[in-house]
Image (cartoon, rainbow, N blue to C red):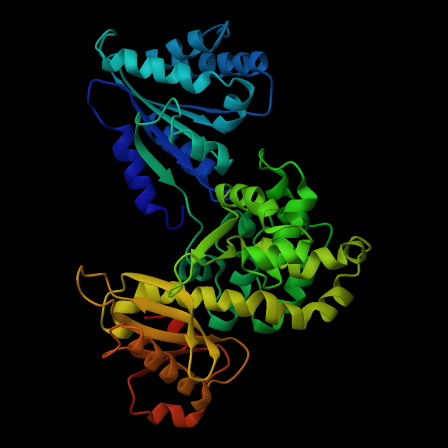
Length: 479
């Protein structure tokens, strides 16, 4: 198990809680993050009951559950559950007079086939809480990868709202940990690799069978053999990620929305214009993609009400920018030719924007070391220069924690470029942005000017006397 110590500790603490009442927890996260592996190991370590549902009717699911309970209890015959009320009585009964972990994995399959299941769960939990049942220490964990469905379990007026005492979201590995996991010691290789597969653990183990790029020179051959080859699981994975979400019906529309974002159309108006729809027509698709954890809405650092959209799964961006436009050629086995034609687009539409995201993550996670102050928030933003009638795009804006009654303090303003050397011109833009923001009332007296360079820096920047920080790839991936 890699880099899941915190999640493991939280789950063990929940499953070992000795209070004389049943407890409910929810574990969710996008597919391929290792949830099943984590929960299987947990139930094995604690002697709990684990059941992984499949897409099936209610009757078949109950039959499979009865067989699993019988195996767990070493009963001579399978349990015959007439309905979920009876099944839940048995599952909660496993915790009678003793702490017992019960895991229902892929719970979204069960609730989709049996919409009343969350309400029945609430009734069993409330019955125990009211003291109408004997001492019961069942620790029930519901797990699922359908983010939109799992997210609704505990929200709004949902039956289980307020009943859960644990909610764990299994996130992809952070970019530094992902580099360790893939054994990518070269920071340039690590950044390019992360722009393709992100921090999803399964993509190294199950999907490419530990075939990792041996060096930066091996990156292009690796992309051709591991991602663009029609014989490899990663080839169709981005399409499957979209198809697996139950709330996504018109997949063509959703692919178009994602393609628009991947090509740099990050605002609602530009997305709508790209796909030939009105802005109001894409509100629902964007909401569904957000709920599914595939798209993130990010507020502008300086303009209230303005948001941009970013794809959270790098493999989807790679698919939309590189694979989807040449899908037929890739299916014919022309991976080498397609990659040769797509290399420039990969740099501009995939790695470039992804590098900016990594720089914002770096500022948020390690900003205290770089800037000398702990960040309160990090975002991208646009500062409008009224004198020069221009807009100043800022890739990294680091705010200090807000203090009521005081001007918002900006710790750092940053520009990130993947494929070009940064120099005095870039620094001058940051200085101008700092002046513009000072006029707007921000506290920029100690603001650091940060240049994030994937392609290096001009030599004379090293001797700059201004409050400047240069962050190259080596520093991005190390303290």
